[in-house]
Image 1 (cartoon, rainbow, N blue to C red):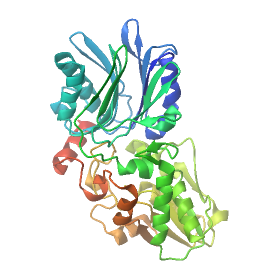
Image 2 (cartoon, helix red, strand yellow):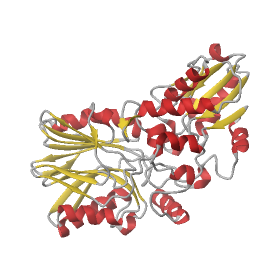
Image 3 (cartoon, rainbow, N blue to C red):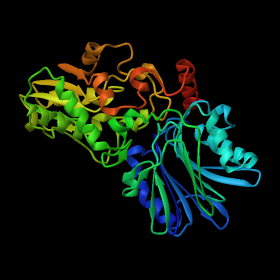
Image 4 (cartoon, rainbow, N blue to C red):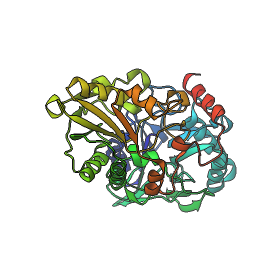
Length: 421
């Protein structure tokens, strides 16, 4: 998924560094920077007065775990650029030589811009991408920003006193507006706007459900408002009685509040999270330990029937642990409620579950999933209600219907290869 940010103008280095912490909910494996200096583009934390700067918060979906792989420097002939991007490029080996998709994308971009010019070079690269990519790049002419042509991956902008800044989410900018899908912008020594031929706008549904900050605006929504609507819709299909509503911190809280309010039940902070543990879901596999991240509060659940709300159920790693913690804390019953449909298909557009076999819903029906996570009952938000709330979006991981044609088995193999080759 990743978080990307960039600025050009007065104090661009300072602006980029201040945005980065606001994007670490999108990736915390590492934070990388690039900046413009008198000697060209450099990697590393920028000086505050750098004219142009990039920041990247890493959640790896390609390339080795545990290393900081962006920003990427690329050079073709006399053209040098630095790139950060958000998304996944499944067919990156067809773009250019590279150890991972970001490196191949940067090299392809440098080559095509040199050979075709800026506007046509960007368009040509995007015409070949299978996957999704919103990018920022430092070029000799200024800061290049490109929103994914189908809008799967977000990108926003805002003018500030001395220049212009871009980021994956408006919360990092302190406001701002979304860049239209397929729009490319160059801001700096030159100013240019052009369109990449877009497909239908398909913002990632999981951005709204889980990934994005609730204070960000995305797809014309305040993200928190979407989650409230999902919580209310989930209450409409409730068929059990319970005493309290709890939630899996932190992303499920907004949906849980609306769910509890609609049913007239008290919301309790019965599950607490170590705020320094990061997001377990986006942590590399060998470091995922939800038992260290969560604790249950016995005083709030002992002897009670608990409805446990989560925003999504993907691998089942967290929810299994939390259900057990609640039982160990004395809960009489634990009923799991998910504010989205079952995730049954892999993602090839920027989320790190690129194979079906790692999904809790793979070859399991709802009853089998309930048994797997150890809950007394399990209800998902029906797909029809989900679609009614989100409207046009990428539902690929829920339905297997992707924004572009994808050979799933081939894409799974390519993603595994990019991880462990």
